[in-house]
Length: 278
Image (cartoon, rainbow, N blue to C red; front, side, top):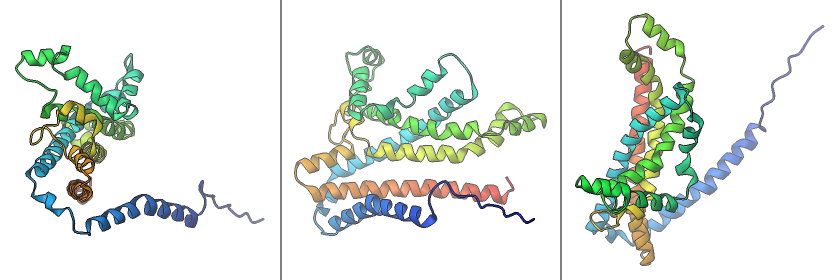
């Protein structure tokens, strides 16, 4: 008697249907808006915006603050994710749920809450003023808001990677005489670096385009605490649609360039590990 193995059916419909849905979605939600945006820029109007020092000041502030906030998110997010995955303690689930709070709150509510916490006259603002500096209505406030909204991306990206990390790797390194620090840097961290870079990329992309959480705490002073998304809104309120589009295009190109650099570093790391037999 001959038996025929039954082929395993995929959970989703065939390749043609799913590919068609994917291409249709990406075309309608990504390609068409970008094509319309490019055609709008090609009209040639609004390029005088590039000659405004106020525009470049806002762009430098947004990109510089986003990079600094991304670095802080990478450091803090790694620690938070490690603690939530590797340790068991009372209130762990509550703290894990708090990580998603910036996702759940409307951005305007987050901005008002941060301003209330750090503004002059509040209990925390009064403490910082006694130390001789203020957080609200300064560039420090912008950095705090960007760190706040970007941290969940790093934590949620790292948690599955830390949970799936084989514990026998660390045990093998310890059995060979490696100390905790050497084990972490040579065994644990290289395996988590791709997930960390991915989370930091997402945090940077969110920080660059953030508006609601920042405008309340920033102070919005031209040449000092005015971010690029706010300047885009100001251009729109002045009916300078082409000027707003030019600023948006500059921000988009800068963000794509930084994200491409991070992706190139990630690919280089993977090739280096494969070449060294890691």
